[in-house]
Structure formats: structure tokens, C-alpha cells
Length: 444
Image (cartoon, rainbow, N blue to C red; front, side, top):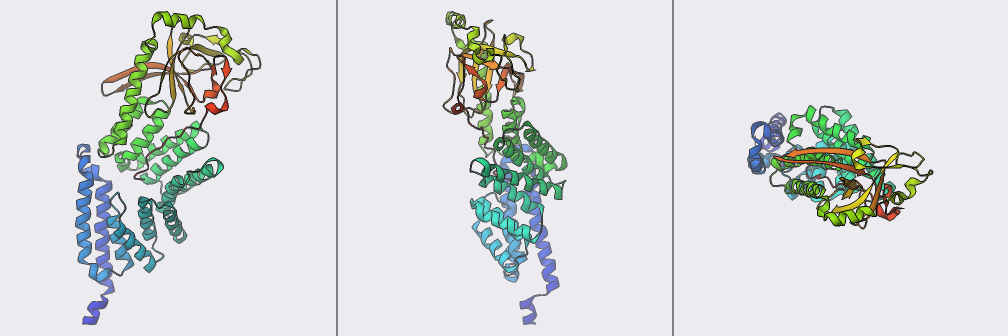
């Protein structure tokens, strides 16, 4: 009888472990579906509520610890339970390491252990774990986890970085193909496309694919709408694409879903401050006195066109031929072919967290327009009084409303300072650098 108690009944073991697995699964469901049973106003309590549920589940597991402490399946459950917390757990790492040693084919063990190493900041070992899990069985968790680890590891430059990001996108795509109803896989694919967008030439198609992946995540999985990271990362892309209203709404939503996370509120504050300054300076033409403005504009002539007046000038679209100067008021929404906007710089804006070098330009009719120049080196800029020409300008009208604040203005988007003519001259290659956006992967 004592011997039977020591060894345990395999049938009972299986039943016990199944009950414990259900408890751990319920814990994850509580965390991931929190806002199905709680209001967004309760978001500040979420972390504490999850911690309390974790404690209850751990206590239930501890009751069976003496019976199953050397079973891989039990160690996996304990590691998973502790892994529900956002931070690294050395106890979870120890349990999961023992689990995969006892049972090397335990795919979930390798995946959960990889997550612990990722939280710990040991990306190389995390990658080894996820790769090991894939060798056992092709599964979406390993694929999407490898996708995010590869992006974190792709801190190099040039071809090597691009290669890792492309591999990251491929892993995320494979994860989605294995389960098209999995919102987390779609979300991680969206993040992968953002990395590809900024790493490989800012192809607008990549930006659209990122937005489509995020939208699909929300469509197939209602919990995705409660993911603050999704709203934050998408808001960063919206801001870069000058969809300022959507960006502000995204930062605000991310902050509401995770009040302890300060970055979304800070980004929202910075963007609002940027828009406030931008619209005020545009309305006041840089606050320049009328006399000074007239003196500046009296020096504005077609000589400022520089190479744009040459029949051999190659425009940003590849067209060969000279461009005609055009007043700002005559520009239409979208791309303005065969013309060049010309004016004097009346202000520049170096705001916190800016994604573009921003300046105001006034033309011969004293019309003021915002110019946003992307991919600029930190050392590049224009000075008040400089003559600036924008070949074939891309014009956008903005009407932004957020929390009872409204901003209305027109802007010209310039993808690189190399496309500008400043004081009659092209800009040298040192004026340009590749833009990057550090989206937040804190709970991928």
C-alpha cells in the first residue's frame, strides 16, 4: 500500500495534472480577457488582480507539489503560472529548465522558457529555446516568438539588419498561416512590417500591410483591442504618416489600458504640444514683424530655384525638365507636378520626439505653409531667412480634433532633405539619415 502511494496511480496523475492545467489556463484567460469582465477604468487594478489570481493558482499547485515535483508536466505548469507576470522570474526559469531536461520534446516548455529568457534580456538563449521548440514541432508560438526576437537582435546596420528583419517577417507570416484566427500572431506580423518599413526603404506598401495586420488582429480576436502595445505601435506609425488625429487617439487608448506605462501619455503630450506650436507659428508667420518679413521677401527671386530652372533637372518623380515657381495658395491637395513651391523660412520647430524637421515657409504673397522634412541628419536644418524650394510638392490638409482641441493647417511633406533646394543649392548626402521609430515591444 505504501509503495502504491509513493509511485502514484498514473490515471490519477493524469486527472490531477489536467485539473491543474485547467487552473493555469483559466489564469491566462483571466489576464488576456480582463476587459471582457472589467471596465477600462479598472485598468489600473489589472496587474494587481492578475497577481492575486496567480497567487491563488500557485497555492493550488503547491498543494500537489510533493506528489509531482519531479514531473515535467507539473514543472511546466508551475513555470507557466509564474510566467503570467510581466517580469522575469528566476523560479519560473528553474522550473521550465528542469521540465525540458526531463522531457526534451515538451514544445510548450521550450516556448515558455524562451519567454523567460526574453524577459530577462537574454535574447540569444531565448532564440535557442524557440528554435529548439520548432525542431520538435512547427507551431505558431515559436514562430511568432522568433519573429520578435530576430527584430530585437537586428541592431546592426545594412544588409545584415535587413536580412534579419525579412526573416522576422517570414516567421510572423508563417505563424499567421498556421492559425489565421490568432490575434497575437497578426499583431506581431504588424510589428514586423513596421520594422521592415523603416529598415528597407520606407515602402508605403509595408506601412499599409502593418496597418492591415493590426486591423486583422482586432477583427479576429476581440482581446487585441485591449492590447495597449498594439494601439501604441500603430499610433507611432500613424504619426509618421501624418495621421495625427489617429495617432493621438492611439496614444490615449494605450495610456487608458495601461495607466502604469508612462510613454503613451508622454507621446500624446509631445504631439499635442507640437501641433499647438506649429499652428500658432503658422498663423503668426513665425511671429516675425511685418517690416522684417517684407525685407526678407524682397530678396526672394527665381534665382532661388537653382537647378530646378535647368531643362536637365530631374524631379523627385524622375521627370526631366525645368519646374515653374508656384505660389502656396495655388498648390492643390496631393502631388503637384511640374511646379516648385518657393519661399522664405520664418520659423523652425525642434520639438521633443519629433519625427520630422519642421519649418514654416512664407511665399511672395505672404502665405505661410508648414514643411515637414523626414530622414534628416541631426546636424541638418534651415535658418530663418533661408530661401527654400520644394520641387513638385506633396500637399496635405490637416483637420485634427482631440479632447476638444482642434488644429487646422496645410503642410508639405518632403521625404528627404536631398529633395530640397536651399539658397539655390542642392543638399549634400550628409544631410540625410534613415529614420527609425522605436515602437514598444514590452508585451509582444
